Amino acid sequence: MDKLKILIAASEVVPFAKSGGLADVAGALPKALRKLGHDVRVVMPRYYIVDREKYGLKPMAGSLGVPMGVIGEEWASVYEGVLPGSDVPIYFIEHERYFGRKGLYDENGIAFSDNDNRFIFLSRAAMQLAKKLRFKPDIIHANDWHTSAMPIFLNTVYAQDPDFEYTASVLSIHNLQHQGKFYKGAMDVLGIGWEHFTADELEEYDGINLLKGGIVHSNAINAVSKKYADEIQTPEFGWGLENLISHYSYKLFGILNGVDYEEWSPAVDTLIPSNYDIDTMAGKKICKQALQKTFNLPQREDVPVIGLVGRLAEQKGITLLAEAIGGLLEMDIQIILLGTGEGWAEHFFSNIASIYPEKFGTYIGYRNDLAHLIEAGSDFFLMPSLFEPCGLNQIYSLRYGTLPIVRATGGLDDTIDNYQPYTGRGDGFKFYEASAEALYGTVKWAVDTYYDDKEGMMHLVKNAMQKRFSWEIAAESYEEMYRFALSQRFGISKKRN
Image (cartoon, rainbow, N blue to C red; front, top):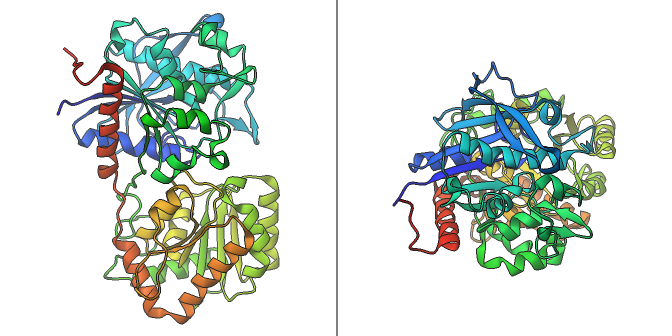
């Protein structure tokens, strides 16, 4: 098959900048596509946290002109590097006013007031960079609202541009809750013409919705799991766009994210005190002991440790956990939490740790080494999300033999098979109702299994560690979606010269 030229734009990319799962995908998918033979380029902002020296970034010659509608032409510098462990080029758009700040999207939880201009600029800069590089992409791949202006630009200001004559667009939705809603004056910054300010395109309640425009204009849409692709067509998970997405369901895919097993595997993990695998599990006991010691908990081999790593946000089900925590801590268990987020949650769980110092350990913040240690040293991993487009921690947990306890939503439902005690099948524990009672009952089920069903636990751990969600498989699905997008835009017979 013909190899494709693919331009991927994202607001965050591992290891350079990360706030969520988008960064993991943007850092791993391009490498997997490159292994399939495709010519992939990645574009992201050069935030302050991106260390040019650490990553060996080199400045490109000349400046990049970026038309910004009524604002006029803005100028940016471009730095070039590669995704670590690959030869995939990544380009960093440097613009002091837009990206020369510590936060990616906000500061102290307050969104930057110019986020519309910042990410319209990123979207337009990515298109202009392709022209500067003389890189004529077959596919432009936008991610979330931050770069969803790219499909809009492709169909408007670049509609007659020979550099994009044979280009189709794809938009990945990693979290539909965040849509890029702004004052309608941003239409003048987009510079695409007010005829596109309609309910069928960008207009919503007399403002603009960038993600909505991206959904309308892209040739294919991807939600990051099959279950999430179904869920976002319902009022419960559609965040007001369910009817629009249902209307465009013919171009909607649900491709589950893969995992980088070179980083997330206990056999090769350099951040844990002892490596182990399915045949030699002694290292997991050492990791458990080290985890308990790190969080000042009694070093007991016989007690189940339940780990949590993630944002302390409503989406992640922290309210359910807060409601259930008193009952949970009456059990003979230990719980370890790593995360940062809503102020009340940080205070609440810090307070719980001080009340139950022998049962609850917490670190408010994020440390990658601790995340790896929690995955390796815990017996269970709790993800009580209200919604979860894909989720990665539950997939990491499987590999580490740390059994997931999850709410059956989105990617959590797609990736975890519920334990069946009579057959020994399954690799985790699921609950369905978004309630503290359901969470409590399922944790109790898991804990009872730990204490009373040793053989069942062994089956579960082996089942979990044998499961694989590789980027190689996911990349092949993305390749199919790219070819679908091209057929949507040009018809099957249209070929590049």
